[in-house]
Length: 351
Image (cartoon, rainbow, N blue to C red):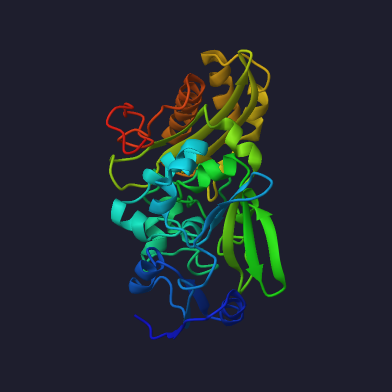
């Protein structure tokens, strides 16, 4: 591992100043970063440890009814917060479907948003990867690419974003609070991650020194609590990233869909908000035919990036399944196999 400086700032302002220097990165739990460093994929000159900064580990309901989640809240603490699970069940289910229990105990909300792709060519320093080394090429294009992107990809990169947590957050219009060199600002989570285009090495809208300090869910997000689900198809039930996933949230009034939110995971370099599909469902009766039409609209721009045409049909089917389960109503308990299409609601993890 390359030698590096270790800095432990006392305040957010000190952290931003230290991380704005070239070659600096933030360190929280390090569940992704340390693996990258050990493999020589990430070679920072300076680690800025933010784990002891005050005020970043709180979950609080604000005066306007929105929920503010500090960037240092652990994935496990958030998912197992009873009020959070009742109010945002799809988000809790997504978090409990990601990684192992040990990793969820350590991993943080802020780090989850910024985790790097799990593309095998990104992790293999002997392979060409435009994310790792701009302009070097993309070996995934002609390689083993069955789990790669089918939406928003470019010739420069076909990797996907790995987060489960981000998918329902994007669906529910979450906002990210960022502290930077010019003070604090906010950005919609949907705008945080970038599609690859001609610059796949630029993965987010963050600037040098920018620190995510919180994620905020708007008051309207609670209105979907009774009809919300997250589903994830993976190659094994335990500790695997999504091949495809979907978060669906409905507000049903008088037998009609008054509001709908839909987002997909595992299909692009960012969580994919399916707004065209949402438009199809507004004001209609929640039927199988309506859900099929929405699924086709959600994947209307999809195209294979390699040997992965199956993902398009698989994504359509998981959209239909997620919408169907959401329409049926949020289960009283999170399934023992969270987000699994094969799970029953018996054997709950917690009420």
